[in-house]
Length: 290
Image 1 (spheres, rainbow, N blue to C red):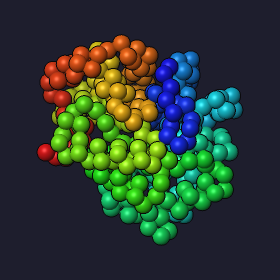
Image 2: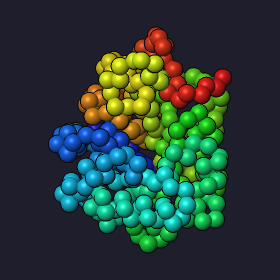
Image 3: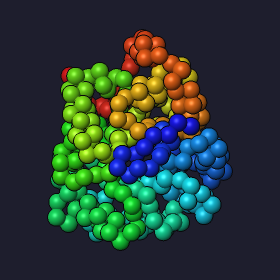
Image 4: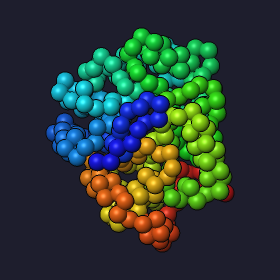
């Protein structure tokens, strides 16, 4: 598995992150199979969240044996200092660990949520305190939606986050405003040497009304290997991106790993041809921008 350095953290990460949302509603046996597959294929960056159902609980039994060999990240969606502190402690208990490599402010995709997190008594204070106590090594921020790049640019102006996790795929980057905001954000992230990790790389768009939902993802994902190859190629070819999170479905994970293991075998023009030829390709987020 290809590895890249996570900015100023100077940690060599697998370019595929185990997005643990896929463990939120599966059995321990199914979780064990997926985690084992990840480890056996060189994926050692595990990213979960307190809000991912039972994901932290499913990962817990593995920690005594694998903790020293993985990068472990979780997230809090709380907005106050006190509630965020409580949730971090609960995550440590559920994961059965004493410390985390990364704690992230979760789902901060607009200025309103950023203001809540960064105000006096906001969640960011809990994350900083946890780092000072040695409970966490690094602090990050994540966000969904079309406003994430602009919001995260402002976030980096307010606090030097070590990592940022935000959406990127071929369709989103084709939206003029999204591209402009994303490029400005990447410029600042590069100046600060913050590690940029991306989500929604293989998102096709929203589920259609009445459409059978064959995957546990909240958006419709691509599932054809050649299209996944092109999506992964686009994301990993993007300057400054250190890793992408696997989709939130255990059945898609092997296809994403397969695509990453063959990264470099596809030409840019072939990836563009595949992605440009897709019909019904759209933003996974309901609101649209021009």
